[in-house]
Image (tube, rainbow over all chains, first blue to last red; front, side):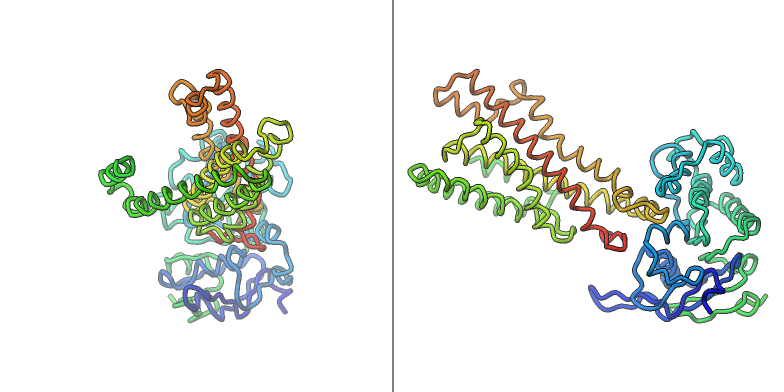
Length: 229
Length: 241
């Protein structure tokens, strides 16, 4: 059944044993076909970011299973899994060096060199053509987050995880990055798990919605059913 | 008198490091007790066989690793990490110096020179692990971003390992740089006071300082290779947050 979905998980959870036994997330299940967008909504501290960290294995699930194109992700090497499931975090966390070096970082990790022309084309896609030689740490918040998105896409991931990528930006930059993400997802037919606080954004972009509260899924289904207008 | 002076200075600067002010009286009492015991043991050993000095150096390395462990609490299994690194750094450098006859096996030479090398290697190890812990905890986002892009733990950690490595060797490097201009160190002063040629004493001091630098750098090099496996899980997840 799971081989028909690009990304799926069943009864996914994570509990901490120390300093006290505490469940961060439990019993989360969903499935996404290629090109579908899942919006994950819920209050701060509900477990939304934990879910994304489990999906690309920055943290280890303590229960449940994740499938990527039908393959149990526990059978994949962590580096291969993370190349195939890209992630954009709340802050850009660019590395010291040029913008081009940041964009080329991911492919270089698995032995691929991308040419300056390819980097320019990727940057043009996010509206930052000619930024390749700029110092990555001198960019504005909105520009930095665009580079973080480009850096994740340079790996050509099958699934993109977006952990509130606009939450640290001012209003103008936020709108710009959201518009960019919406057009990239539509153009590239990207399978996406998008953690957001914005119900409007979830309605506009998502095919499915997963609502989480206190580490548990409280609702899951087609966007129009979970978030009726 | 000097112990009181150190306490007075720390009292003056108590807002900068309250923890150190509390630690200092215990450290001073412990230090004076230890050095008196060592003096008595050395006096006894000078009349005994040479091999006993090796036992003393092994004991020093164990004690040094135990002290480093306390400075690197957040790093998993720090004692073994520090012990392997100190043994590799100080042990190999001392063995090479003994092999080439620069340091003899005489208790009166091997124990004081060895203790200087081990003590300085210990300090550098503490600095290295403390700085690395600081670098990692303040760059969790960057490290996890690198992992999320498919980087290996070694690649994700490299800039912070390099920063810690450079920072911990600065004191040893500055000691060599300032030798004779800012600083006439203990061995040279002691040798001159006991009637040795100042030129020989100066060269011997240089040899000891470069031994200290080599041992410290080697220990940190070994440590930098071992530490990655301790702060990442087998699934390449950062455990030091």
